[in-house]
Image (tube, rainbow, N blue to C red; front, side):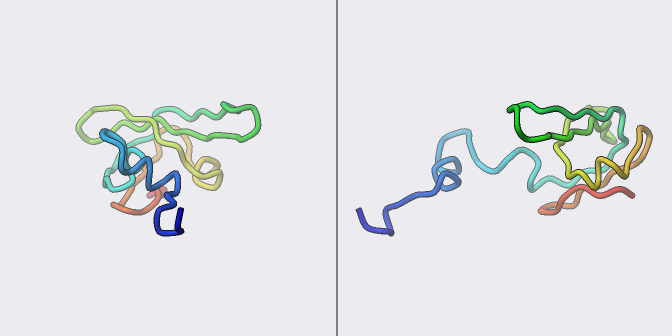
Length: 89
């Protein structure tokens, strides 16, 4: 097998039907933090999530960096531009 035929896990995931980039990587949104949570879901890595109420009233959970998780409290506004990580506003 030549190097041109080797696929990375990302290429495989993107090529499968119904699969692609992680949810919301290309989305842009603005919302209010309603809940913060964190946990060792795989037993070794800390995952930090925010529950966000979007402008249309829907609620979504978003995985965020430690810095953002530490910077926000419930009621703060968080914005995400397409192709960028969420930031506190």
